[in-house]
Length: 440
Image 1 (cartoon, rainbow, N blue to C red):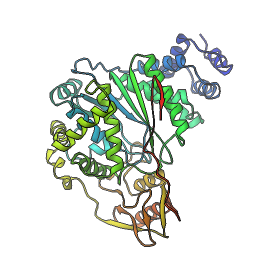
Image 2 (image 1 turned 45 degrees about the vertical axis):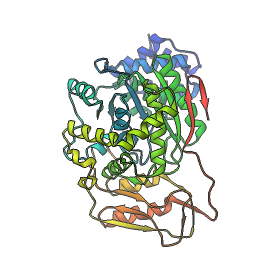
Image 3 (image 1 turned 135 degrees about the horizontal axis):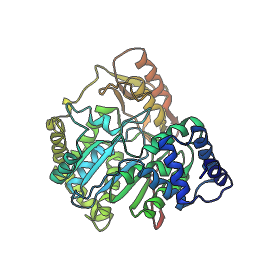
């Protein structure tokens, strides 16, 4: 088989066989196919697309290119949750203990942040002495014992995806629904869950800018999950402003604790109840979303969800007192007010700009080896629909007062879109996609 023939076939819009797709993935991993041919093939996919069968075959080939985790040693139906990324998205920190407290085992592998989106593992490592690396037997035993563990991804999960994405990133071939869908789903399938919940975000702070784009991506990922025998559901959710009020590693842990205490911002709480409801239904612990919501609220009100977070922290080497005393988390030296420049109603907040402002003061990485400051970040005071006057505090910047903080503060002001009249309400969850179709 020759790569040039595979490129020509895909360029013509013809469907590749499973053998041809495995040939491409194997060549990417071993390096026997040169980068220029892999890039040409990716460009051909961008132009002509892939069928559902091709996309599923590509996903399976990439999933099997490295370690495939077998979670059968863990009792119960394992449900994985994946977000396509956003600013202030700390839902895993809330959902893992909340869903586990309702009887669904959570054995989750998460990643680090890069750029303006934060990573769950970085957030957990802001908890003093918390271990995000566990041996596989230790990982399984912890989930069987307390129902939940969140650890860093194995270095050998879907290595074909890592190599292919690195090429796509520098050849203008990132924006392809089949390639994005197979990238996400190859890692989820390799991670071994029985069912998968996807949180597909759209808006200024997300990769997909419109709801229509997000639905198209969700449909592709649900089709892959269905094709390979994994029950998959996707929620299409808003990222036209940051989720919650706090952006930054320790700050987001603190806000997650607030939600688990029954407090915290309404948008974050509502999203977690909705996503958690789907996880309980997928995990067989509720017949429908209404029953699931009742169980989740009971776990919050009884303190069971917060206690589960404390148990996870203790099991992974951290101080469980953090769950009751979030002031033990790292704190920035300064809390600097960011005043509004004009009067008006908040119509939107450019989430990406807020994430970049937090990154500027040290909360994120520009390169994978950059050090991060767990304590710094942004605290939003005004959100969409709020009325502000010039001089009112829009946000606080948690950082050391210096030139970088001044630049970040100016970036935050520019991120706010103000209007003369109150904006129309926007739904937090736009649609739900399953194998049965799109429900809006």
